[in-house]
Image (tube, rainbow, N blue to C red; front, side, top):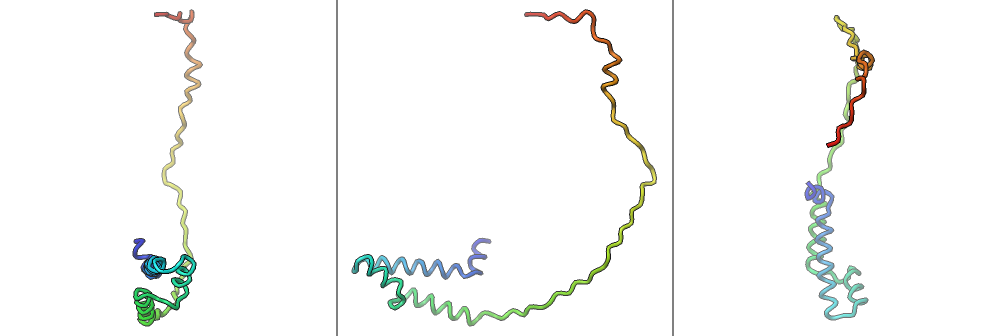
Length: 117
């Protein structure tokens, strides 16, 4: 999915161009100092064969793009109708009251002795 999105947005050209620039910079560093190699690589006056092929492919790709016709989408709107109907049978369920059961049972007299083992 990531590859499809990157391809649709043209990122593959950016990756190829980065490879071309890196290759050009390495080749220029073998014969020139760093500052001159950087200028020669990125000035656009000295493209390598890969840069030329990328530019040519970009131009042919732009020519083959088809204009998409945008159409207006019409949605019909209908008022929602709600009908609230009460249930036919209704039962009230009460929660068990456990605190009342605790009051009915008296505490053990005398209190239990602690058994030490």
